[in-house]
Image (tube, rainbow, N blue to C red; front, side, top):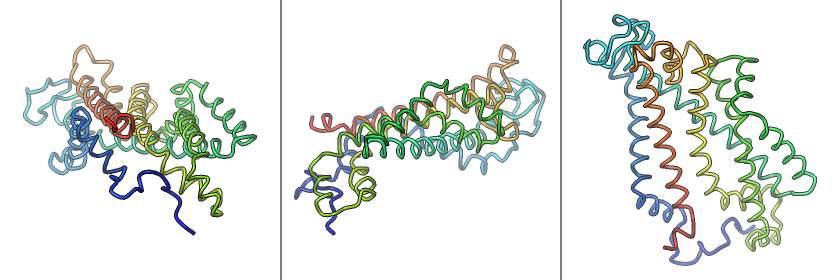
Length: 295
């Protein structure tokens, strides 16, 4: 059976591959490249930092509420218990970024599956899946996540699942719209004419051509998930045995007037991370936008 997954203009001789073209457009976006650089630095620091600065974030290293720069053993100061803020920032990034990535993966998996099936089969399948999507969409997302975490446990796994479960409806609607747009195009009809099964058409023919906006959505979902995790940690609903930036903000909120650094520094890390992800998402949106590529 002939491969009908890419029967359109990109297969013309001499045509630039869509991924190469998108990467060329992405590189021309200085804001997006700056975001990529920021995120890369954060990931490197998070992964290598614990090996270079081997301090347990739960260990009491000096007097409580020591300001930054006053003690060499705690260069960024200590929190209300005397724990090292720098160690918390380094180790907390692991949990925060992991929750963001895991929640985004869950969001995209659920949203893509629901949206793809609804947009391809239409009829009764579409009606049922869209009513199901609307039910989740009208629920207050943060409140629903709080309920799930409270009912089950506050482990990072449950937190990531809870964030993914409450965040997938917009992705489902986007996937449905893309499948509705593509399902009647010529190369999809060509796939049907050669006897391709529905499963192959959905996942091998339509999905690769629907991916660009979904990739952008998944990127932005990471930032949303990080903010969700920070909110749950701030409310005391995250795992107290795992250090994260949200946990640092939550544990230092009562002393914010006396120890601004205990809240401001992890908050700044969250801000930088979400900003970097947003810049990358905007860059991907521009890179995958065919109207912008034609300029």
